Structure formats: structure tokens, C-alpha cells
Image 1 (cartoon, helix red, strand yellow):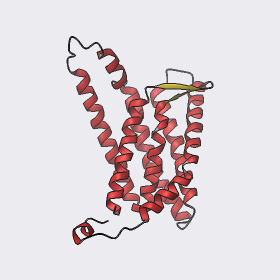
Image 2: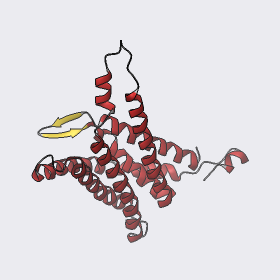
Image 3: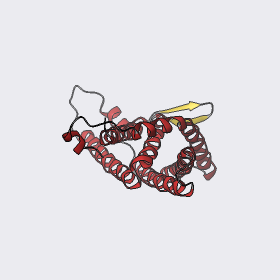
Image 4: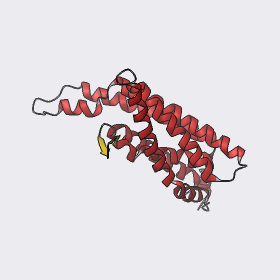
Length: 217
């Protein structure tokens, strides 16, 4: 598998994790007294992937993946609302449940998209700023540093835009704090994986023929 194929595979996983997290985030679960969304299962993976792409393919490529992610996310939401608007068959009793799962409140959708776009672009920018500051050393530092900072940005934007005015400020701060702590806990666990992923991406395979070589990055 050449570098272009690996990039396509990573981008596909990125988009899958992003889309799935937006759908499953309607499911809430509790850990002790903390209320969390099921989107935490997949969304942190997107930061691992953008950091890996940033490290090997560069800042511009990572930004393009983030921007395409936003555009395809908007397409997905549009298709959801088109599907919801279709008249339900008389014998199908699941229209209300279908709308409940896929027809998210517009304010929540806006909060999610804004938080994603700002935090992911910041993650890419800060990752490369840390790379410059460390002269390309300490991958673990730029991976965790950029992810920790961008996850705080993501949680803050989402909670404030989605819920400001509907609950006390103290409750908003508590929600931001709990989500952030869980996200950075998950992010800290991915440090060994970014080393493995970067090593795999940098591994060069010898093209079998000239046609395959022409597609190599």
C-alpha cells in the first residue's frame, strides 16, 4: 500500500468516525454522576488521525481533510432532513423515532459543526506550531499538546453554543469540565498509537510497476 492509498484509508476512517459520532451522540450514558454522550467512542479518533496526517503529509493536507469533513457533514445532515421529510408509509410506525434520532435540533447541529471546524483547524495549526518549536522532535508532546488544547476549545464551543441561556453558568462550566476531562483521558491513551501510525505511514513500499508508481505520493 503506497502513501496515497494510506492517506485515502485514513481520510475514510476520519469521515466514518466523524459521521458516526454525530449520529450516536444522541445516546446519553452515565459514569457515576457524569452524563456523557456516546459520541466519545469515536470522536477522539478524529484528532489522532488529523495529527497523523499532519505529521506525515503536512499541514495543508490535514486542513483539506478537515474542510472536506465539514462539507460532507453538511451533506449528511441535508440527506437526513430529506429522508425525514419523505411521507412515511401507513404501515411504518417509526417516523417519530426516526426524526428523534436523525433530526437533531438546529441549535445542537450548529454547535456541533462550529465546534468541530474551529477545534480541528486549531489542532492542525497548533500541532505544527509545536513541531516548529521542538524542531520536529517529541511527537508525543505535539500530539498531546495540540489535542488537549483543541479538545478544550471543542467542548467549550459546543456547550456554550448549544446550551447557553438554558441552564445556569455553573452547570455549563461543570458540563464543559466533565466532557473535557473524559476527552483528554481518552486522548492520552492514544500516544502509542500515533507512533505506530506514523511509522506505518512513513514505511515505503516498492511500487510493482510504473503505473502504480505514478500514483505514489
